[in-house]
Image (cartoon, rainbow, N blue to C red; front, side, top):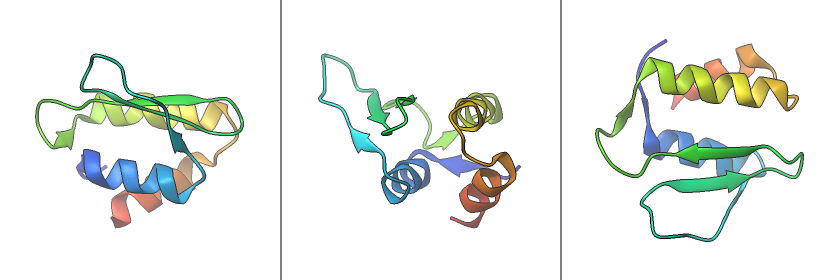
Length: 78
């Protein structure tokens, strides 16, 4: 999988019905879908997310009903 930026992931989440939860005293951004899944996007460090982090997010999305291959294809296209 090619690199995925925090900005591309955030845009994908908004495009697929996620809403941003209110902030706390942290730089991480949390997004909730109507299905109940909550995705946390780091707000610090490198712009490009690690493959491990992307894999964890894709597994969370798959468990909540999103198609794994579609998610990976969409994120790579951004």
